[in-house]
Image (cartoon, rainbow, N blue to C red):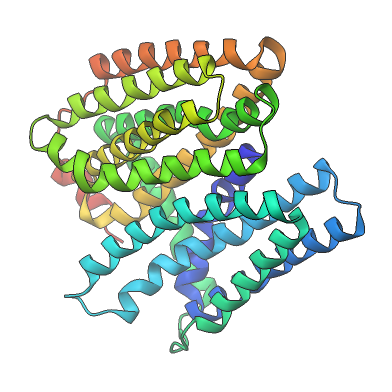
Length: 363
């Protein structure tokens, strides 16, 4: 399930960015939310009809992910068009806080509803929520860009960006570190449901509570802990702290025997994940030249989602073959080893791209 949720972002994020440049963003967002509402409504109908099985549920996860993959880059391009330049930093910060808050409320509310109502009713509420978003999307001026020209320019710029990454060791190492981190951190969404639902025999509300505590940790960490740590440690030390903490959480996940004992480790996981991901993003933005920031950032997101997709498959197969707890111990050990190795051999040394390579990216 974690793999199928990440796969659409790997496959469709870059094409969706080209669509955002070529078409009216409001139309794309409306179509994406109608798609999401239709998918959620279809899952509700299948559930009420009694024919919803694991295969159809996984297909539903993928098609929902497709809608989110199209929606995300277009929504990001919309924000600068509905706020002023002075309001943009605050809008982006508010968007990040909103995402974390919904990450808390969504799983918690879904868990409560699953305990009281049937799953099809939850899917129906989800569909209604997407329809509300559809109606709230503002009308925007139509884009006058030519689709063929936009796609040609887009493909050419991506090819140049890939060639630049291959020629620039600093940026290449950053992207590789981000991919390795993504493949290891996906252990949490891939195996935490297995631990709680299968190993401990708990219900959906307990799973929602555990993921809600992860969101709480992410929000509190972003507000209180991360600023304090950044004032005292450099980036590489922060990465070491976050990743070693995540490795320790994997060990705790393997040893836990009650849902309540998961809450504090999951909160720490949320804070550590936020810290490591933000530091990787900051390092990348400092190393990427302005002329290619958007394209290489998109490549970074695609590689991250691809690594999460492959990682989720690998960890899921390992849990099925060797057992969940042994897989968690193995993941913790590999996380520690890879953290130390990457810190020793792939610490970025250049603050920015060489001038000649930066000029070569101008389009």
